[in-house]
Length: 262
Image: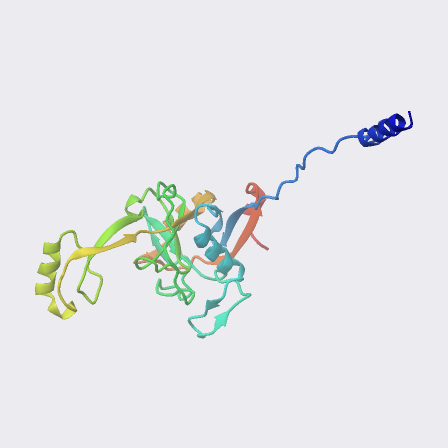
């Protein structure tokens, strides 16, 4: 009898795991907070432009743009030849190139289209990001992997700016585009001063184009108005100034952001 009581007592101790008012704890529902969508707000001398930045599809390009805009990324001042950090890059720069029906370009510290942040970085192409209409925010460059600080906003579909594979000849000091080996031979005979050594073959492949990293969601009327200003060539006679370029993170953009800075 004594053994039986002990067994019953032990069994009861093992089975009574919680008081009667015990509420089971549900599985953890904690979720890591999502990184909010970044937006670029251009406060210009002609009005406000708001653009959505495609951080997930163009992370390197967007990180570079945000870093320069906020001053968290170091850049080299082409006038003083000194490196700057903690100073926003785009504030005070201009839209130095405006071509009606094509695009408006900015981000050059010299205002000539020849300046940059003192470094270059590689192209970043995503198959879903193309120059499909007005308001596309894309990187200006001088060839493959020469991105820096300059950008442009399109007025229309500009599909020829999308990424594509381009072929170049071997055996040349400069980049010579081609389609066939025969073309390379002809160019080598005609311009021997630009060659290194044979064979001259059309075998070098490079991806070329402009990296899309955002789109205007508000202020296309401002972008359109820029095309109408008096210009000398493609440069506005009266500078179109980027007074300030702010980066904000939010689920969606707010109409209050359009208000000009005081």
